[in-house]
Image (cartoon, rainbow, N blue to C red; front, side, top):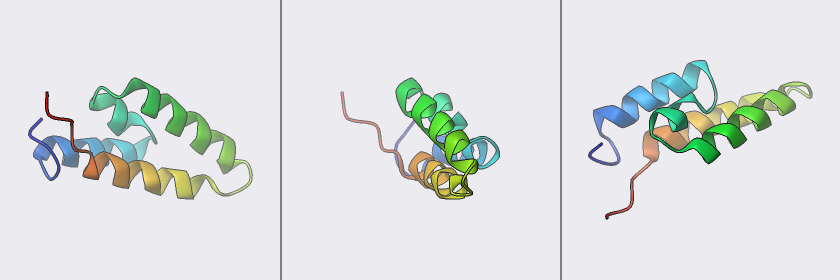
Length: 68
């Protein structure tokens, strides 16, 4: 992926729109994907999962890989 604003980030953000953490998984960030998925699921019980879900979308869209 080219970096922030790339089409890969848009696809990842769309994936996270449907399932929190899926966009991070598409980007290859397994730990972030697991944390966001579990946290969103746990917080939906107390009606705060929408906050993690929204963060997941924004995080996937703004992700910029480190230069190697």
